[in-house]
Length: 129
Image (cartoon, rainbow, N blue to C red; front, side):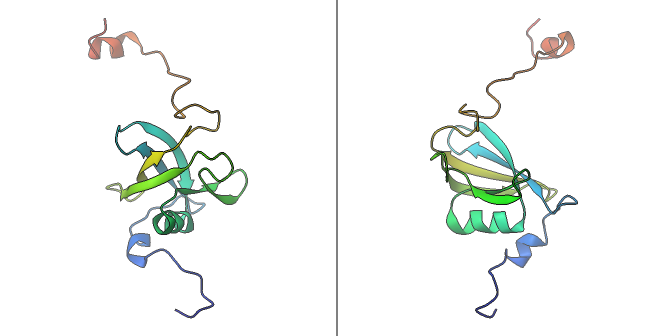
């Protein structure tokens, strides 16, 4: 690689990824020690490379069309503990140590505020009825 070329994601990792039409794949952030699902963000090859190299989660903002490292503006940083590719190569699981809220609303996770009601069949299956 010449000094003018930007670093790239390891080709062996890139070859395993399945991307959508925009070159993106979902990245699930999970608290490493509790298993709590924190959020879902979107990555492309460069966002994943930055995440692996820096140890901080970097995502691609579909609305702003720009990279963002979690916590740059909020201080709510995600320190990476491990990264795993799922069996199909279409989703990344990033186990992190979350500092502060993961959700842009200020909630601990993006899944705290809007639990949906389960129907009777689901309640019976869970032994709740």
